[in-house]
Length: 294
Image (tube, rainbow, N blue to C red; front, side, top):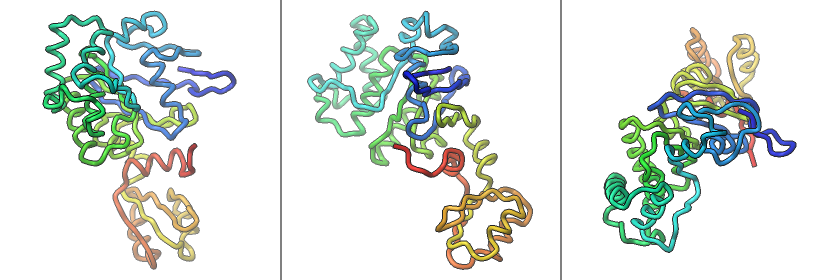
């Protein structure tokens, strides 16, 4: 897939496949091309070049059919503040030409699933942030879609609310729903997604399961040494070890190399030394860099 905005190419030939029933994550820094990708997938923005099939159908010619079978949970709160919780769902159901009896039944089911039944007649302005996000998710599911696209669904939520949303998304995965997630929370991606694609500057960098990516690109443990003692950098270069020199500290990606971690512990952990298990955030930072993106 390729997406251009005038002279700017936001997506530069990204390809991937999501099997039915998989929870797939799309990660990347701000400006990496994630939003352009998902907007093409749900038919909001046309491709500049390439081919995109959803449910085996061409998005360019059968976008109406495709959009009837997907749900989209956008990052922003686009609920109608003048309507109640229940009315927000009923109005959205009308866009899919759902019959009144089906709308009522589906509304009741979703309000119970997201623990919002006691708020059904409340105005959305009276909901907490977590409740509002659960309502946006419920609205995205009103048409009983086969694919749910989630654009940073837990941004701005407190930890309790985030975990409530995670629980509901996990339950949807168990029901066989296909899910496509973009997020800046690496723990969220590692916890929920079966496979991930990391993109940057409009290009695909790596793809695989969270654990596969951690093992391949970050190793077993991360060792941070500050400040760098004499001889450390020369030792790492001689060993061919993967590391980042951040000036005030050295971040070393220690895999299963025989003796490397033990040598670092005994010879170079003099002042401040931190040893911790490698995680998905280490993979993300190593591949996309540590500079701020605006």
